[in-house]
Length: 251
Image 1 (tube, rainbow, N blue to C red):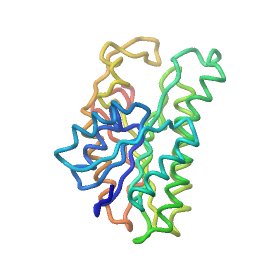
Image 2 (tube, one colour):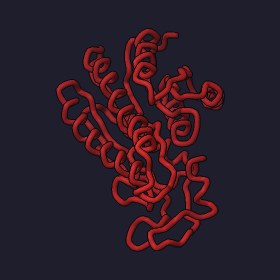
Image 3 (tube, one colour):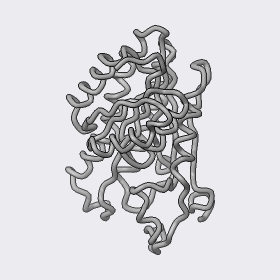
């Protein structure tokens, strides 16, 4: 598969924010590599975006370094370049008391939410620094948990704080190669991951309370905007959140 358009990679592209970002990038003219564990979900995203642009589903397991390497080899073989990487795939641990979180649960979240974006960013650096025209853009999916945690979210919140460090460090190290790195922190996009918020989620005072959500398309469009900037401009951090969610102030 060859194309003259710019190439974008979205991890976790089969559902939610990843799907919304993939569709927005296709509408913006990118050929989008759709990565995720489930081929059927990736093909659903491809079908939804078929009227807008081109895409290539590539099943990949973000918890497996060899699978990540194979994903980037496929991109190199198919297109010979990469212009945008959206490190989106992520997961949380069960909401159990801090002292009851198992080491296995902790490691699973760290592998997916932190190690995978680190590895993807390394692979993207290797491609972007050597391609012509040189450079590219990497966008990391942070979270408002990088600013304010929810109860019983130690693993998820810790990895999202770490993503902020990865964003800053890789942005600094990418300067020499015209690689711009930014982060989008999302609050309550309407996706399968936030369906539980309709019935109510635990608040710091022990109550369960429904929380407002926003359409995931708002996030997808924000990602497409960040991707659209010339490489001499960068959105280092952006927060996109449901306006009325209990985040700012006292709720």
